[in-house]
Length: 113
Length: 114
Image (tube, rainbow over all chains, first blue to last red; front, side):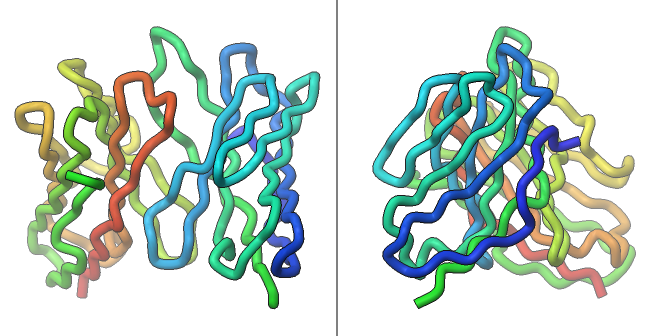
């Protein structure tokens, strides 16, 4: 039960922005949105996470809607090395946090030259 | 170490044999997780260790699977009497206590049961 919905695949032209959507309409107040990616034959890599404010780091930006029911991961200038499966995950934080990340099927992003 | 280290990177075993997979987490990371990923599938949670708390074993698929974490550092995942459906990549991850910065995953152990 991944609690998120993502498109199975997307294409993006090299050098353009990649915008990956995620729906999490049942998100709870104490749940954060996390994004990971998995490049072929590697372990998943943490990208970014947020609660309700937009977040930016050296890898990407995360835009969360005001009602928190959806979010978008933005890779501002996609490169061929960004081709990967991108996972959107909601996870609670708190004293009872069990730490489990539950991965869904993710979005396969293909960056094309 | 600089990252999460898993060994062996590849393991081929005969059906019915026992196997042990090892994970060395990042130094100072108190939380450790095991996942597995079958070919073409997503990641399946197996077990989670956090400090001295009892591990969350809710993802272990059968009693043939067990894991331990000694001294709060190295972890070993043991699969007894391996079956062909156990063939998968077994991934280990570690994080700081509150995991604000997310998990760091190892490169995994590819297990093939023949």
